[in-house]
Length: 120
Image (cartoon, rainbow, N blue to C red):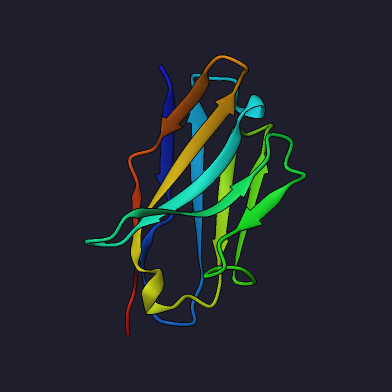
């Protein structure tokens, strides 16, 4: 059974930090690129950060570049999102996503999401 379980969300003040974790099971984690998305109320789900299967390639949305860092530990089947200098506009539900493309199919899994609230 495939599972992606996010943790680490919460409520913080502007300027503070949070570290999200996403623990994966039920599939070959090291074969999948991993992504973090977020969705604010009334808005679409947006890609925040992604990391390649081996961890050598990362990419970030302009809104979080320089503040957020995505990383992964393939030995622990876990991907992380370190979020620094948080802003109120970072408030959203954050979702973990695993994706693998072959020549004939896309394999994709989602977590249930974790709430991040940035407010003074």
